[in-house]
Length: 110
Length: 112
Image (tube, rainbow over all chains, first blue to last red; front, side):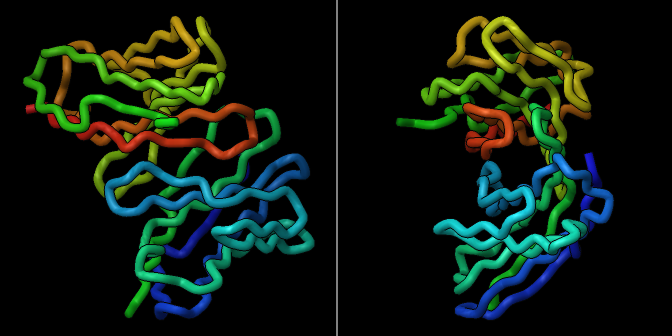
């Protein structure tokens, strides 16, 4: 599976949009981009995933560049409860296993 | 609908002891997983199962065993506990490959 690169940490002001980048320059055509987050000491929580089209759900939006080499997770109106580690994962279709990296520690500042 | 339930939440083991971490899900998911997470690190896959009676190794299977006799349950067995197995263990499940996983709340294990 393609490797991903994420910033180690980011801050965002409460109420603003949080934009979390992920680089996956070696992604192949049948690999999906997944985002999970882990709030302190809890189990990871699935957020969203996509293949090449932008995706939106009640939690977030996922913007994937046209060449698919990078993506951005957008939390439109960040709250203090969004403080967490965010994992960007690339996984090819049919692979039963997800491999987690170390993610981005997002801190929402009041 | 409880999702993925892990027991116990906390446990302290002495070196050489053994124990079973329990994981059960009520979503009729075929795919189940065990991960461990060391402090400040990402999750590492220990074992996984694609259905009852089928298990396979992940990245870090040494020192662990699993079984999957039913769709609902996926216990993780630690034999001869070692300090290196001090970690937080997460169980997860999904109904379909490429869908999101549902994780349990974890078991915090300390081996002394």
